[in-house]
Amino acid sequence: MLSDRQQRVLQAIVEQYAEVASPVGSTLMAKLFSVSSATIRSEMSILEHQGYIMQPHTSAGRIPTDKGYRFYVNNLSIDQPETVAERRAEKALATRVVNGGMSDQIIKNAVDTLVDLTHNLGLATIGDQLYMSGLSNLFGQPEFINNEQVREVARLLDNLEPWLYEAAPNEPLSVYIGQENPVGRSAGCSLIVSRFRSNYSDSSYIGVLGPTRQSYRDVMMLVRRTGEALEEALYG
Image (cartoon, rainbow, N blue to C red; front, side, top):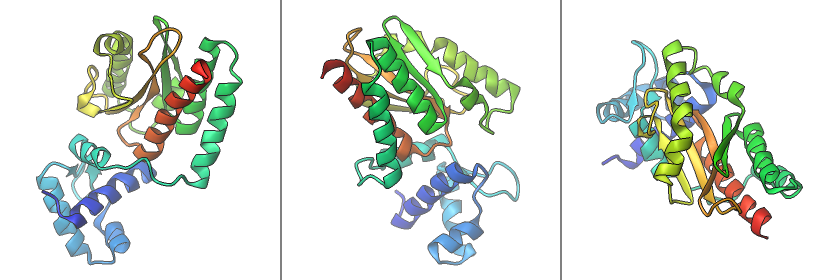
């Protein structure tokens, strides 16, 4: 059981790491929480002992583990009041989806918009095919400079389409973090998908694949809203 401050420290580490892409140190956390570095180090030690964060290198700061990300996502609210940036993103999404034309083009436009907004790889099922866009975004992330990790990402992508049809995630929004992914579990990726109804299927999917280092609230909100916007555009 994490204390309130430990939860807030973990949240701050997840969000800071998503922003700066480097391990988060106790000095920065101490400034954010207006406490001593020793206090933060103590809290970090507890979080590390319980498996929520890890120290990738000696004398480095901490980064979240898959367990830490899962705790963060499970306690995340994406129904908070929207920011100005989020409203602009939704406006761009709605404009490109509504003006898409045919059903398959509407879905492709939605995926391409997600790519632009999240800087991840976007994907969607269109009939019996998986449409993907933004591969360069994915492999342009600093996490994927290791050849073995790139191969794991490719393995995940090669098997993603049959897995989606077989597993058929039934939640409106599903998040698979790191080791939770069905294949490519060492790829260090998170898959965030929304189910939507289309003229192809009652269980079509749209979402993004990116590093576990994500701005989860923003990305989850955008993926969920995209699924809703597609249903509105396709079914009126």
